[in-house]
Image 1 (tube, helix red, strand yellow):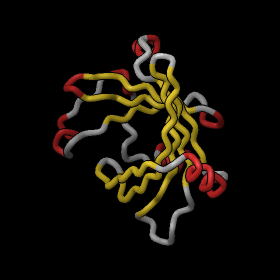
Image 2: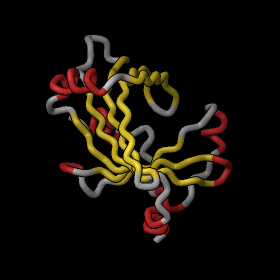
Image 3: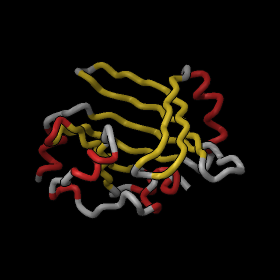
Length: 150
């Protein structure tokens, strides 16, 4: 019931398309394209990013670079077969943190994953998730977006 209430409150609900570029020969770096659409008070806003990631959860380097929509469109064909589509809801939780609830669409329909970003590893270690978070999957690579896109 709590998830339903969070959606009904209309807390910044948006769509996210994550598109993964083929990995280079080194296994520790990956890049993704992301087009994020948010519906805020009847205004549709769409932003495009190129995100470079290194390392694995829970601690990793992540740099998000804004790109123009035509750059996004030019890179789109490179992501064929490596795409994830989901709805995202940002939910305020205790400690001034925000939970990002991702509800997957398409071939992953029905899958729901919650993420929380922390300012430090110690903050992450001290975090006690609310019961509605469900099973901890931080270290389970099957739930990494790059894996879900494959």
